[in-house]
Image (cartoon, rainbow, N blue to C red; front, side):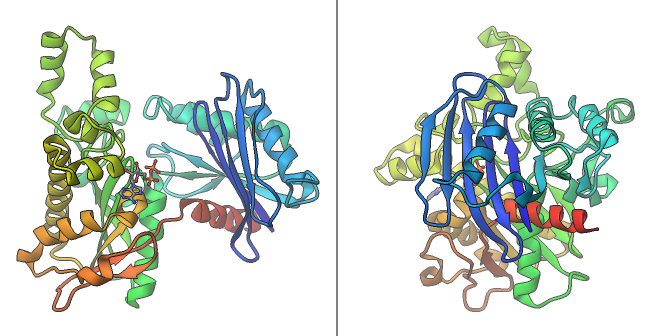
Length: 398
Ligand code: ADP
């Protein structure tokens, strides 16, 4: 059974075709600059050549068409026809309070995702474009929605209610939702398997640290708290997002810098985080490089980030009465030994250690727990696409 996984952004569309009999990727790629001019990179995993070219992609429908054409083509293809795709799984960012798990898409689901647009104005419209494009190009092929927010729907009220007038929550649904749920779910389940402990009674802290970053506290296999909020702007400082700040700063920036509310939000989403502090880059590789050369603000940006990761780990240990394991994942969590050494170093006072030798690697599953550590420390590469493909297969097969 082949499942096509789609992650649609406003001007991009990433895809992976999974052979679910072996859970392997048959081909993957990305359409970029949709609605501008158009570019496609398609990578078959069967030894055929990579296709990379500018091609006109006026809408997501042309992008899906181009993807299908490449997947089935003589020269670059991995399947013989559209009929070989049994189902499509879509990443959908905001499922609000309506979705606590993945679902088969029908008209009701489409309108519920549309209802969540006010909560996820930057992502849901693009996700919907991806779904509608697939429905148009592949009518009759079942489509499944997998939500970033779903895994965190188990959070208790005290973790998701904001201390603002309660009526806002009732009227608009403004509460903590959290994101990266698919990743937190995947790595926490992998950790339980690896540790050989049952979900019941387990306490895990998952650190998804990439361009966007969030931590989750996972008790009994369920998310009980996470650092992102109503939107992905809350929590840790990120590549370009501020994370949590004193909300009064918003009016200070507006007044003193003469910016509109919308412009201030742009500053907090696009010009802040480690880019804002360092002035160097939003990419941690560049910042680590500059910091190593003695760049003071690059070093400060890393310090602020590592410190905040540590603070949240401490908070979640308090919330769960301890932890069995801390798990690092995503671009930075998987690939930065410096980050892991620094953060766990700050936790030595709580009896948590890593093995520096074992920590000295990039990008694979590893137990880096140090001798005598009270908490296990694991690095688990995330695989959100595989979770989407698995959920899709399970739902379609009933
Ligand atoms: P996204 O949040 O866009 O999915 P990723 O999880 O792929 O992003 O993470 C991308 C980020 O991971 C990059 O911006 C970079 O900061 C960081 N990263 C990737 N590789 C390394 C590395 N070797 N060292 C340090 N940071 C890295």
